[in-house]
Amino acid sequence: MQTQLPVVQSLPHPGLAVPALVADRLAIDDVTIYNECDLWNDQIFDFAHPSLARPAQVLDVATMPIARVLIDANRPPDSLDNPDGAVKSHTSYGDPIYSTPLSPQEQVRLLDEEWGPFHSNLDRALTGHAADVRLFLDCHNMAQHGPSAYGDPGQVRPLICIANFGDAKGEAVTKNGALTAPPDFVRQAGAIAEKLFGDLVLLQPDPERPAPVVALNQPFVGGYILRRYCDRAYQQAIGSNYVGLMVEINRGLFVGDQNTRTPIQPPNLERIAAIRLRLLGWVEEILRLL
Image 1 (cartoon, rainbow, N blue to C red):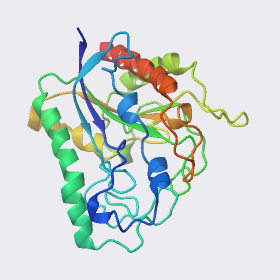
Image 2: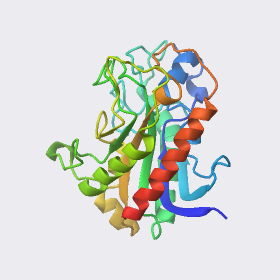
Image 3: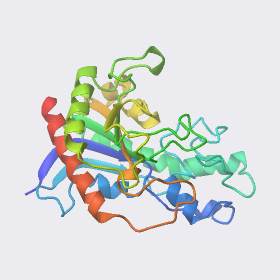
């Protein structure tokens, strides 16, 4: 019998699908789509996977099937003029996505047909389990080094980033707004992750710039999903009270040091299984803190 975890998961970026509306307009190929997505995230965060000695069920999972480079469910719907917004026009390396720009009408249609259903599903998941959910996890993975069009181009990233909109100690930062989890809880979550992930090494380590095992709110403090669904007014409206974290796993652990043209390869099942096992152990331990 599987354990039931009081957790709802958001997986907004593992998809590789292309909407029919734009399939014949792309200036990018499958290789770029592959390198822009949170590869194999639905496998990494699958705590019910049969490879686990003690598999566990979460309350619910919302997963986005559409490629992140096209539709980003972790961006607000009013970001259509942003090249890195909800309906993107450029990749994380600054390359144009479309041979001819999308019209405003096409952007809105993609928002309604692709972005909207993911958020409806996530809202239903949290509303339907409002009485039971204790932890909301916004689940991601990230390139080993910051992409060129991001705020940390070429920078070394940790093996795992845990975010609550705070600073490097999980404490509140005025410009970031309210925290989604208490600072002490986040620090303890970081210490547990350090213990569990400390034996893992990158597939292509950089001996001149070793990556830290864990960082809090670096390189990401959280995104639209964490903010929207951990907002106190939202929780009050659905009659719930849970903490929320965004978790980012370094793809250098199971894919390698990617760039926009890294060749497509099958999932590294051995590495994925090792990360999955540690993630489940991490979730079980931090739930005891609650």
